[in-house]
Image (cartoon, rainbow, N blue to C red; front, top):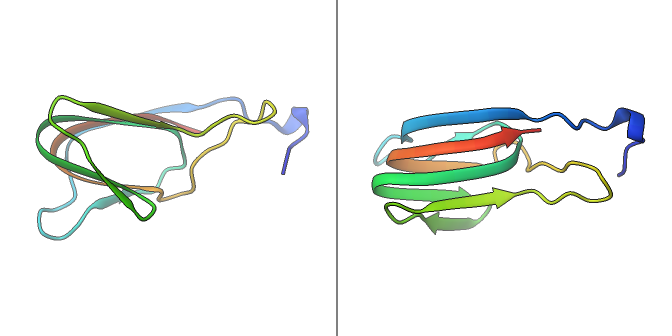
Length: 97
């Protein structure tokens, strides 16, 4: 559904957090924000990001980014809880629509 130009929300908020996500052995931590863009940088050890049914293992020293595409000048965002992260030491940064 497209919104009228006067109702578009073209403002995004920054999001950032670092450290451990999830409790080892008890699964990943689901982030409840509606991300427009989402990046994970693995500082050390293991890091797994679950997006829907897919699990992505992020190697140490690597950043992986997901962006919701724009369509017809409408800013899209992922659904609430689209990303679950389990890591010992990583940095998560993104924008919230």
